Image (tube, rainbow, N blue to C red; front, side):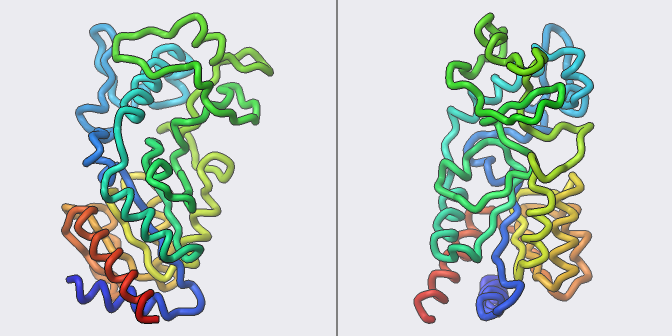
Length: 277
């Protein structure tokens, strides 16, 4: 497996066009940092005696009916993200970026900020991020979440000051997390839709790490990369939607290892090629 991976990486490294090394990451890469998956059992939100699944409360429609509850959950997640630390996979990707420089692209579905905290810079956060807020009424300004607003425990309510800071200065409506909800569409401003697809088009290799392909833009990124000749490397611990896409393709490699183990291989291979050049 490692030898196959090395052969593919060497071929892409020698290419002059469509030679980007693109990494597409999902929740699986943050597992070792203690971040539960949004859709998993730990993603269920309990308010009072009512259990909400993400597909229910993670929508703009639900936010408009219960804004304080959704913001309370967002601040609960904020505290979780802040207490977590980047793991070895995050740092390996940052190191690979240092070697490849502008031939490196990272596309992540994660909103937890761990890639940036590990030092990655060339990032498309296609599901938004937890650092920013925007007006729920459509005012165009996106701002940083005020530092004065702290993360919450599960049973903590918003304070009066939180409410004040989470009110749009332009129109008086609630501010909301700058993330993609289930009843929303990908766009360029928040989700870098076109930029991510352009990166896929110019990729020589697309590493898919810790994501199953359950949402449409990541899957479209994989389809675009394939269409323009990239090799897809599916790095997950089990089969997924991407596996079905590439199973019968020639330019693919399926790796059933942890993200950390596979990234160690990739890091070693790329560094050796760089030294031999």
